[in-house]
Image (cartoon, rainbow, N blue to C red; front, side, top):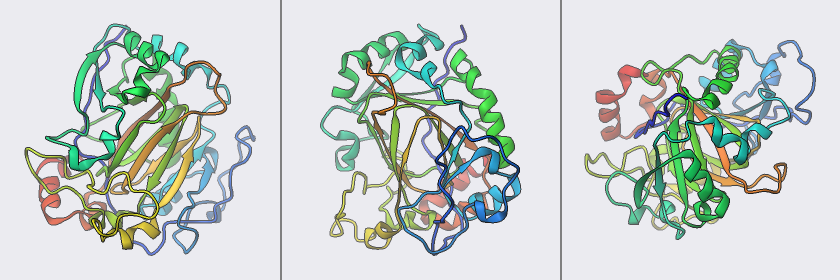
Length: 345
């Protein structure tokens, strides 16, 4: 079986034109098994207009066309949930069936955060990581920590590119279909990655941006996602550029609850009302535009079996115009982006 490649991304996301609103009254997809239909009229895709700040539209993949997706989602920085990419039966992604699809002995880098909200406490981070330490494990051993409850107790998390594994090869046709439907193109540096995010229930990836458009495919469990429009990033207390410190793509305002701490983070007065929230279910895909700040928490799905449950998703970063990124980065981050990342966008 092919070896698993570990890819660590220090920078993520890409911003776009600031808009007054990023929401829509797109009809909800209530029947995932509905038959395919011809491409929809324009009103079936997200369009920037005033609406509830908590709404994220859902649309079936067979309702998309590349031209409309690029205009209404990519060009405006509008998140959307895409349904219908997977069949109803998602059992192959449950814990007992999934881990054998990886190389059982290939090394995986496991982040240990600790069960005391360390991953959501930026003031406690040191260096360039929001984990306490990183250890090497295998898919078999890591699956055992999930089944025993240790992964959830100690907040363990694994990120790795699994494109060359059997699991990655199973996902490639769906990612290719997604690309055809949306017009998204492979990133020049990352290529056809299948970037796995694997953990127990309860882990939260803290607030950050990516400077590329991304798609998050939910395979097992579900994820609660909080998003902010790209125009909000400068108001979300991003870390400054520091070669020895945390990446400038992360926020010091991670882990905020309602009401937010406006004393420490006054910029939230502007950004908080613009946030969106969505519960990403198994088989759904979330398009996260470049520079759209997001915080993601893994949760148990009521649809899965009653056995040990993990939360599993994969993402892919796509080619993104630097012109969609430039308006949203602070000056120091923009200089770092131009030096290291813009060439590959």
